[in-house]
Length: 329
Image (cartoon, rainbow, N blue to C red):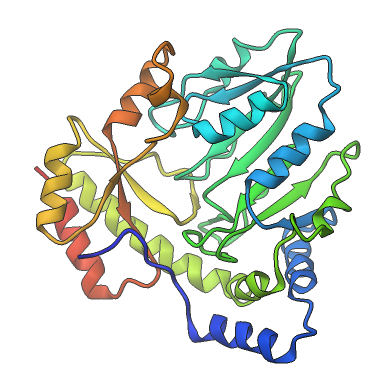
């Protein structure tokens, strides 16, 4: 069975971890942080042990804002919805685009009012640059990229102009610390430098040592990922299904397959042929709050199947998955 969980650990990463364990005094967090600063050409970069911590820190620092509404995607995970709510803000869910799975400019703009503080731009399966018009709205934009670090066809790392950016460094992503997050703080009014060094919040040196070699080889890794994603896309077309639009940026996690009918038949077909899959958006707002009228989000939450994609796959595995995707019922 081809599993959904396929951690990509090379000898290089293991050597980096062993070096840290043997030397002991190696400051891997500072080393990785410095590398990220060079790649993003930004000084205000921090590393945390998960994605939730910087979200909580951000909300804590803006708790005195008189504006209390934050616009979010109807596909936002419910645990993040709760973090916003418990911080004293009101999450306002909006519908998404069927082509990208993220809110459109029109949907976000329609919810802006005098009480709107910002927009949480949560992206989980593809990296989508926001329409320039988003930045003309009177609100703060907080990016949450569960897709992790992304790169385009020229191997240029994706850079967002938003006020506060969070990139997942989980095991599903190419540049990974096997749990953790990268934060780019472009807001001069927010200071998280002290918090980033607290033991309960900061990324460990052991985790950071995984990311050092992965980041240094990102061009090679993204090139391989692009080839796999292209094969998947071409195979899906043969089955007359589709996936999210090609935005020009490549990131790893899962490959989202959007179906024309229910998931059960296709999921069983994949299983019979040795391919594990799972339903997307299972714990999102739209699946848990029945009163939301967001038809596109509802459609995607009931018709999106996640297919494993990993740099650990050899050619034989990729060919098998390609064959399954091109012959779906």
